Length: 277
Image (cartoon, rainbow, N blue to C red; front, side, top):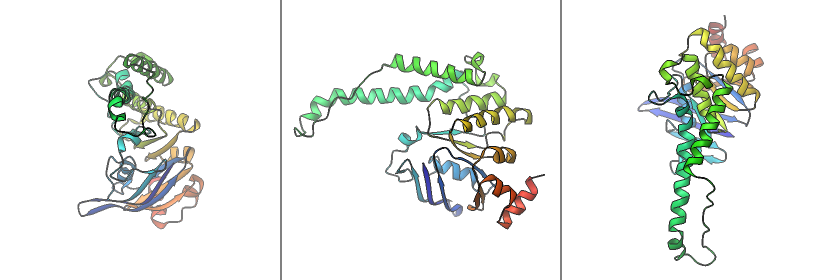
């Protein structure tokens, strides 16, 4: 699904990523660990081009999305993102937060199809008989798009036991509730992969479990996930591949049993000796 080839990222004179190579297959649960400042979050943000890579390739579903000629917004539809600090819109209710992206994207597609059909008689005048285009199929309306998005959002809220919070604002939620809403907001776009940037680091310890439980459920359902986290127990239980990044390089990549039970890289051995107590 994702192939990262010699990925580099510079911020001015500071090179944060120094040639990252990794392949992520459909259904993989990849956990990325490493010390603070090692490049983990930058790596994740480069995967959906929130940070433009300085060099290298990111092949997502067969397309190099690091190529500046590619419309990255088309591909971001299939790549969800969950942030450390939730990033919910404070001026919108919970259900409006979940509905926002699918309604915007589908209405944008609808407008594009209508515009195509409106201009088609004119543009076809200048095409040969074998190159004339057909009208775009339109099978929905704005009202139907909003209704379907509402029903899907409500279903997602029921899944996490927060359907009674649909019409409240994020400021009334606990940290754990906000992060679970942020996760199902990503699910509302039916993504191929979800990127998690330290999803539990801003939570109080008693709220971490409810977020990890939701992520475990997604893993069992086969969702492809790439997770930057400090939760080593979660990595051991859920991941099928763990990456150790330090100073902008992947120093070790292995299944959890091997990664934690028999680490080969001396820097990883030192790191684990400090975080596993």
